[in-house]
Structure formats: structure tokens, C-alpha cells
Length: 317
Ligand SMILES: Nc1ncnc2c1ncn2[C@@H]1O[C@H](COP(=O)(O)OP(=O)(O)OP(=O)(O)O)[C@@H](O)[C@H]1O
Image (cartoon, rainbow, N blue to C red; front, side, top):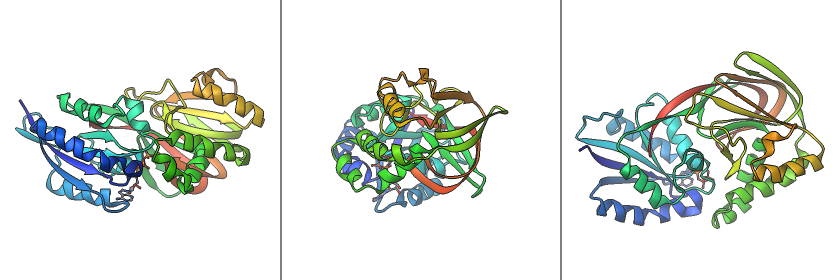
């Protein structure tokens, strides 16, 4: 039977300290299971990237079932931490990542079926005997020539403006502490619903172009959830080789308000104001400068020029 040594990368700040607080219980369980482990705690923003680089140089290897003791990377933190780690490992898709959600939103965990409860998530990793491959969003930002992997979604327009406001909002930290990530997202959304203007955009899905004169939200998503639990596209899954794209056009505010309960009930795809596309290759083009977001991290306000394809990575859960 293969043994494992866990390398736990912990964002001490994630979920307003939640990730740090759950560690004693995780360590207690690891001892009970007699699993060898090492912990690496981030001291500041961006530190997780340095830790991954060191682990890459010294410890981590692609999955090999013949190794008597396999070094397993386990990330404890929110979507932002996991996003940073996956992007550091993009040239090494065969290095598996275990994940224990410790953020405020935890959309990735919700979207791929990792338990939100950290101990349950840990138990799932312990019980799992081999890695599984998940599809992820590969985005290429033509303006900045940057390639960024998305776990959850990349959006321009409304969701990006909301992410910007939420990240800036002092309210976030106080709401995070009571696990109200989705509430934080929605409360910011209400103010921005009015302010966000429509913008023209060409979207090309598997070679076929569609023009929207007045797009309001345009989001490529890898699984259903964004904004801390809102199912933007309930049909999306990271298990199939397909990206989903949701476009909502700017409509009267009262119609947008009427869409919100439908979004909460996951019935919004039936609305004529919501368009859904699925494909392996997607391009977004617009001369309009819009905010962008990927996995809750802000992108520069630029004319939109982004190409999407699929990539994959091994996960352990
Ligand atoms: N010790 C630290 N102090 C402050 N920031 C940190 C620290 N370690 C990592 N970070 C930064 O935290 C950000 C990621 O936070 P993360 O998204 O994981 O938590 P969250 O915002 O609480 O969760 P969620 O995204 O689910 O809302 C990254 O930008 C990362 O660089």
C-alpha cells in the first residue's frame, strides 16, 4: 500500500483566519491516521507562490503510484490561494493537488464536490487512492500577453465590477468572519447593478461568432458557482471537456431584479435575457474597456481581447 507525506500549504489569512484556525484539528487527525506531514504557513500575500517554488525544487513530483512514500501537496485556503498555486504549477499538471477549503466563498470546492467542512474534505483526501483529472480554464489575455489558468470563472462586465468592489470593501472582512461571502457579493452587486453600463462584444464559440450590442455580464465558467455560491451556470462541470459561457444583456433594472430570485432558484437559464454557450474554444473581443476578474482576482481594465481553451490538472479528493 502506498504511503503519503502531506505538504500542507496554509494561507493563514484566508476566510478571515478560518484556514489557520482549522489547522490544529487537521494536525490532530493526521497524527491519528499516522500520516507524515509538514506545514508551511504563508506570512504575507503572495508568499504561497514562493513556498510552491521551493516545494517544486525540493519535494513535489508528478504522480507515481510506484513511489513507496508519495509527497502530496495539500492547499488549505480560499479560491485565491488555490488559484495562485495552480498557476505556479501550470507546467506540471501531473503534480496532484489536494485541497481543504478554508476561504469565505469556496466556489471551487462547491463546484467540484469537495466538502465545505474542512475535516470532511481532509477525510476525503485520506480515503482517495488515486488522483483525478479536472478540466480548467486556460485564458490568454492578448493585451498583456498573459496566460492565466482559471479554476472557477473569468468574467468581464458586471461580475468583474462586483469583484472589484467586494475586494475593496471593508465590509468583506467583517462579513467573511461570519461566512457571508455570497451575501457580501450580492450586497455589492445591488449598488453596481445600476452603475454598470452595457457594452458591445463579439463572442466566438468553436469558430462561430455572435454579436451582442449591449452585454452586461459575460462570464466563462468551469463549474456552476461564482460569488460565493451563486450558480451562474448550473449545467457547467469541470469533469467534461467543455467551457460554459453566460451572457446577460443590459435590460431594464426591474427585469434584472426579477432575474435575481431566478438565479437563486437556478431557473434563470430559461429567461430570454440569459444566453448560454458551450464550447472548447471561446474568444471575447470588444473595443470597450471593461473590468475583468478571474477567480475573484481583478484583471486590468482593458479593451476585451481574451482567448479561452481547456487545460487540465490532477487533483486529489
Ligand atoms: N499570510 C497572508 N496574509 C495576507 N494575505 C495572504 C497571506 N497568505 C496569502 N495571502 C493572499 O491571500 C489571497 C488569497 O486569499 P483566499 O482567496 O485564499 O482567501 P479568501 O479571500 O478568504 O477566500 P475566498 O476567495 O474563498 O473568498 C492571495 O492573494 C494571497 O496572496
